[in-house]
Image (cartoon, rainbow, N blue to C red; front, side, top):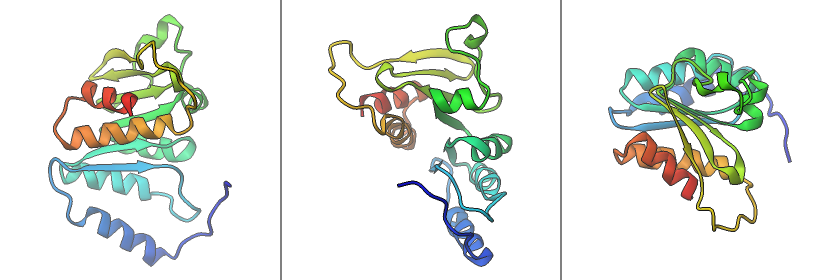
Length: 171
């Protein structure tokens, strides 16, 4: 079931924003994923910038207008799937021009591709992370969400970005 929620009251949005940012500390990880209801334009921008100002790593897993808003604010990491990347105008992953990161700004960019794993750019260096070749993939539903979770957990524990993406693919 997929749908759009009603616009929340402005004071509720402000309270969520305040509570989200209130106790953040350097080393914390904030994950902003999915879509937002109408009436919340600017919230992702403020959460990304606020998280960064508190020294937290901010991971964005979104698409469409939410991705664009968050990218403009400068998150630490972005995770999108192949379809979301194409919709955002990212070049085909097999073209020579696709060796550059699809987005300017984030230190970590990951484009997931279900059972094929992911392609990542960490500080401008391209990486490929794939599941073991002898692994039988039954269903890739929520594979990208697992990558985002692994990235968040591992970064929160102080792991490198590459090890964090490896954990996400393993999950």
